[in-house]
Image (cartoon, rainbow, N blue to C red):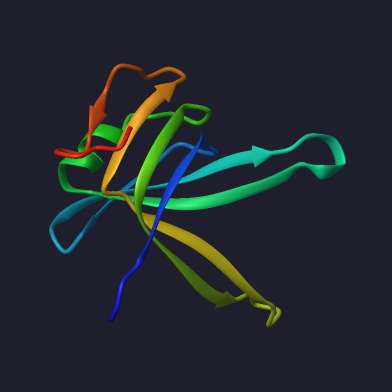
Length: 116
């Protein structure tokens, strides 16, 4: 049996979204950052989120600092730096999302069953 890990991430954009075209489909990539805990026990998590098609059109105008909630399958991708160090990125392909705050509000997309 195969499956994928579905994740929900709420966080702020760490930078402005990057719009691209992949195989004729609109694509927007952004990084969300969230923190848990306080002081010395604070942990920060970074997740790369990819939006495709109509969703990409809706999020391309978001700005650094805007807050969003996203949901979709989560994948870990390992890669090597120029110095040979192994790093790992968390990447989420967005199925549904909600804008929570910042400069953009009151927009929701994701179709039926949007969890937010």
